[in-house]
Length: 372
Image (tube, rainbow, N blue to C red; front, top):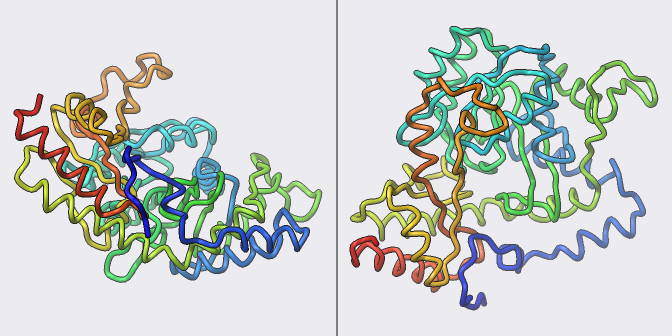
């Protein structure tokens, strides 16, 4: 039985993994004496592709490589624009720059904080070479509309599924809506390894073939380089074995995340907070994020009561100092308002019910005392 913790963490690998037999998974690898591109990787790729409902899973070293190599598979040319959002931690922008492209920022929907279809339609006037739509916090974007808009404009669409493993709408899972879908398996993710890991999923055979070459130096066969821009980006056997152990538990763990989110939504319904727009299956509840103009005071109060919080994400891409003012004239009002008001509360499998109630009491106490 899970015991209550004195300090409530935003995420705990110890609690999230407590009922998973990871030792057996690692022993399989040790006994096989195969550590790179072996049976565990091949089996995980088949299993995750089947779970998601696509033809191919190309596993990689991390989620950023997944985004970069997805763009390279689409043959992005230097200086071409890629439409993306600005409120999701600069991860898409990092990959776009690595692939030689230029971010074209699109504002987000006021409710879901994911890419706005109306804003995308405006951005497509600038002829981007691709679009990256992020399922932020585990909430599916309006991906059907985004996909239809991209198809009509003949622009390839990439799903950024780093926070949305297992989210679904009308029977289709995150990663099955677009030309390509990118996943991260960082330890805090809904499907997390014990280190870095990533993958690109697709049902497009030529794109899959390109990705398999790009992840290993651009080889078409061993030692024969047929594509420039390749990487040494391979998921190792140990991480693949761990992910295989955890994949059958993903639905149950996501259900627990959603149950916590639903309990929070019910308890906070009367407070001056903006709450997640959904606690249904289209929300994997990777993060439980509220919005308030009293964020820093609330975070300080929660810290005093032993509740950890974080801000995902505090700086809009267009205001990052690395750009040196390049986007000073840009206006993304919804994205910037979200960056100024969003904060995350503990929400993960293994979090005890008693700790969930402590978070609820602490938040309610703050507002009952006037929110200061």
